[in-house]
Every structure is written in C-alpha cells, then in structure tokens.
Amino acid sequence: MDVAGWIWTATLVGLGVILIFDLMIVARRPHEPSVKESTIWVTVYVGLAVLFGLFVLSRWGGTYAGEFYAGWLTEYSLSVDNLFVFVIILSRFKVPRQYQQKVLLIGIVLALVMRGGFIAVGAAAISRFSWVFYIFSVFLIYTAVKLATQGESDQEDFKENALIRWSRRVLPMTERYQESRLTSRDARGRLRMTPMIVVLIAIGTTDLIFALDSIPAIFGLTSAPYLVFTANVFALMGLRQLYFLIGGLLDRLVYLSIGLSVVLGFIGVKLFLEALADNSLPFINGGEHVEWAPHIGIGLSLSVIIGTLAITTAASLVKSKRDARAATVEPDKTTNAS
Image (tube, rainbow, N blue to C red; front, side):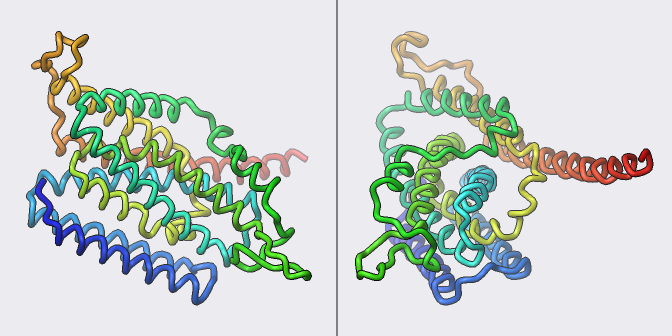
C-alpha cells in the first residue's frame, strides 16, 4: 500500500485537530455528558470512521477498505472491553463523574502514543522478519484462550500494580481531589500531587497492557502501517463519550469476552497460516514456504468478525433480559410464600 507523505501529514493534522478540539471542550466545561450529547458524539466518530473507509476504498480499492473496516471493528470491540476496566478504576479511586472526562481523554492520548510506538516497532519487525507472525499468532491464541476461560470475578478484578503502589508511597499526595488538577499547593505553599495522578498512572499502565493485545490483532488483518494506525485512532476516538453512553450497560454484555476470544483466536490462526505460507524458519519445512497453507481473505475475516460480534451482543442482551426478569419474579415468589 503506497501512501504519499502528504496523505500521512494531512491525516495526522486532521486527527490532531479533532483531539485538540475534544480536549478544549473538556477543559472549558468539565461535566458529565448527557445521553443525548454522548450519542451525538459517538455517532459523529463512527460516521467519520465509515467515511474514512470510503476514502480508502476510492483511493486504494476494496481490499484495503475491507482491511481497514475489519481492523477498526476489532480494535473498537477491544476498546469496549477495555471500558470494563476503566469503569472499575474510576470507581475504585472514587473519581467524581464531572472530572472523569479529563481522565479518559488523557488516557486516550496516552493510548495513542503507546500504540503509535508499538505500530512503528511492529511494522519494522514485520518488514525484516516474517517469522514475527508466529509470535503474534501464538500470543493472540493464548489471549483468546485466556479470555474464554476467565470467570466474571477475574474480569471485574483490578489489582494495583507496583508502579501505582510506588507512586502512593513516594509522591507527596493530597488527601482529596482538587477538581481535575494533577497538582496543588498546601497551606505552606509546597507543591503536592493530587490523587488524580495515581488514577492517570493506573489508566496509562492499563493502556500499555491493552496495546499488547490490540497491535498483534490488527497486524493479523493488515500489514499496512497507515491502516493499522488509523484503525487504532478511529477505534479510540469517541471512547470517552462511549464510556458515558454505555457505562451502565457494560455489565449486560456478558458474552463480550467470549466473542472477543473467538475473534482473536480466528486472527491468531489466520496469522499462523500466513506465517507458514511465508515461512523462512529452517526447522519448519526445511525453511521453505508451506504451499498447502490456505489464505484467509479479508472478506471472510470481515464476515467472521461482524458475525461473531453481532451474535455475542444479541446473546448477551437476551441473557441479561432473562436474568432481569428472573430477578423480579424471585422476590414476588418469596413475598407470596411468606
């Protein structure tokens, strides 16, 4: 995929302007977005991603457009799964709702920076060493198995890592939040950190862990750095508003982890087959390409991703509705029995 320098520049400038505009809105008026406001922004960001895919279609063709849409849907689904942990972190640290926007936006910027670095490293490694696909495929299959076998308690668990514990112990910290500020001065004029800095450390380290899952997944769908980067950016844009839009509904997506495990497992197998087709490792098939390894096209990949996510979402909503109905019937039986 040949991407001219001016296209890269225009894309980076355009996305940067959107992020700056988003940051200005949060800084000017910290508040908890309403459902209407969140719905409008999420719709706008999803619409921008769809339009960008059409731009890719018109300039580079249907194959690359399909790769972008498949990558964007996968990364977007992983981002929704990440919201589970964000909800837990912000709840655990008791961040006031009106200041959560700033935390989420800074966390998204940190995620973009981290993923940008991983994309650069991954693209360089893939261009020089085709066997990297073996590593990516094994990692994705391992992650898929872990997602499929984890219990609900594991999903809802959040443990403070060493960096968070160190920051609590070493940094001079105020007892309470000072609005959304990261620093404050005490009565003696000494500079102190607010608990918000610890929240950002928690969000940032979580972003780092999520990037380790998402980058191999997107490289399993496209090897074009431009599409890898833009799919990640569009998946993260609007995540802040999506948090407020479906934050209370996340617990209803009970089968999301299973759906993601199927998607990641499928991409892992796809990567492994591609690694076999381009094999250069001497201890596999004598260092020769494996001719019988089938190629999974982007059309099939996109169908599997959309179908899996649609089925798991629908099944989750049905189960949640049944559980809610059973929860209302049970108290009635108890009341009648008494």
